Length: 148
Figure (cartoon, rainbow, N blue to C red):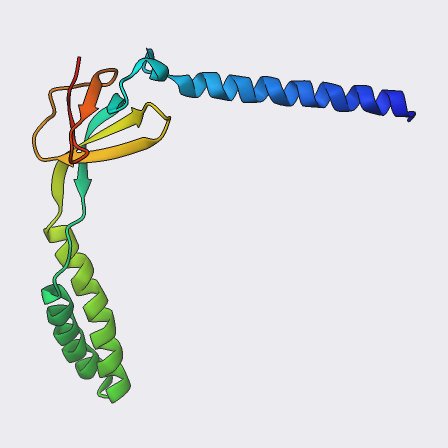
């Protein structure tokens, strides 16, 4: 392949790459029909609002209870130290998971896109007053509030 053909192909590849970058930039500049560049510096567009279930956090009670129960079962079934320790380890892990599931909560999750294109997530117990496409302003603590 001669040099002029290689240069022409390289130019075509660069042109296609630029078109792809421009298309990507354009898709990021509008969210839910709102142009990000039109937002105030502390504003964001709500991308989605939905109800989610979050796992709870364990405080160790489940691990301790599970370890004790697992140790007893391991000792009874194997009658050995290895069985007792293994049962306690498995029981502790199961206890942690059971505790997390017992303490799970339902929250409203709001996902927003900021003017610079970055995204944030906010959880709240109460249903928010905004919906996808709403513009919200972030307060001093970074929490959203209705803008317009």
